[in-house]
Amino acid sequence: MHRRRWFHLVSIVAAVAAVLVLFAACGGDEEEESKSTPAGSATKATAKAPELEDGVLNVGSDIAYAPIEFFEEGTQNPQGLDIDLAKALADELGVSAEFTNTGFDGIIGSLETERFDILMSAMTVTEERQKEIDFIPYFDAGTDILVAEGNPKNVKSIEDLSGLTVGVQIATIQVDQLQAANDALKAANKPEINVLTFDQNPLAVEQLINGRADAVIADSPVVANDARLSDGKLQALGLAVEAAPYGIGVRKGSSELRAAVEGALQKLIDSGKYKAILIEWGLEGGAID
Image (cartoon, rainbow, N blue to C red):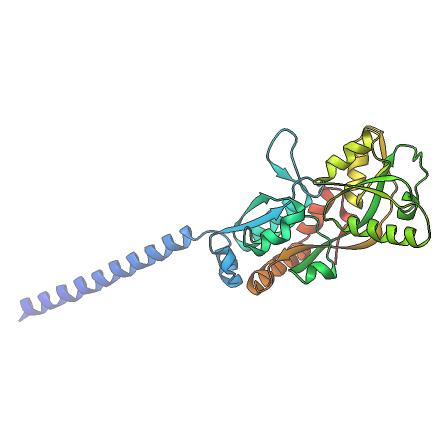
């Protein structure tokens, strides 16, 4: 009788021990799974954006528009406001950022054909562009004019470019501004502006330095940067004509991605990281609320 009870007790203890071992093993698995979960994955899951399922935010940009986006001299390392901001957005989304260098005149078409997820390329938000893609505003900038040091042609506005040769990057808002100015000059029977278009802004600046152009027209932070890097050869007029926001471009229909990026941008603004990035590039004057 006592022996039977003793065997019964041993059986119970063994069963309890087995349960405890199983419980410990399950707990260990859960701990390992938690450790292996990538940082930010919860944010990515919340975003529910199909474009982010590969763990990458692909960004299209025309990387030749310093200080907004440009390659570090002698390398293929992109840097600038848009580059740092895109990396910070990707970090908030729990993914990495990759950049595709794309000509500005075809960048919207490349976004629409899904060559990349979003575009960040100092693109001013306009009604015409909004017909093609959606935008998330993130920075304010206007148009400025770059001239030779001393402003020998006494240029004070776009209208003062009448009869002069002006360099500009193709497909930018400045092309439209020059066309509008020429329409007004023609109506007033005044000499029109001789417009030279280039694939990239640095090519236009080169023409100004070489004396083949009288001025270059571009976004205000870009003009200021070109003047700063010219060793005193060029100067910015300090204008901010038709100030408007830059926008992060998103395909129409990519509502989940747009919401995710908007949320990430707001977090960067609230945390102060957004302002810190602008300060690093000396562009805090263009901060949005």
